[in-house]
Amino acid sequence: MEQKPDRLGNIVDNLMASLGLKKSFHGWQVVEKWPDIVGKDIAKISRAIRFQDGILTVIVEQDAWRQELEMQREEILIKIRRRRGGKAVDKIFLKAGSIREN
Image (tube, helix red, strand yellow):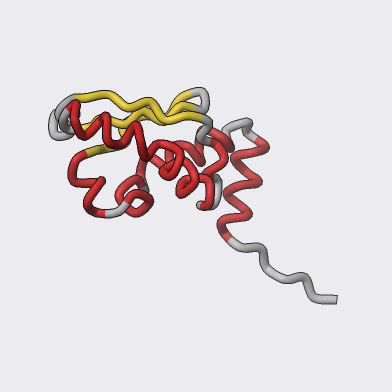
């Protein structure tokens, strides 16, 4: 009986799990894919910069935009959690700052 090849994503997931790094790995993938997750308009005014202990830190260009994203936080979390490994993100921490200097 011939064995089907495993998908690369499954191999990486299994490796990260065996090293105890799966949640961290998936969280950092969210950081990397932030523009794809939130769309170009939100990506213009924000940038995910860190993932640690289930918390995704996002810098937002202006305080007014931060307040707007605060109201969209649950919708953004839903989008994140729909992605492979997105359940690694428990919370989003939004802070105002320059997205260019971080």
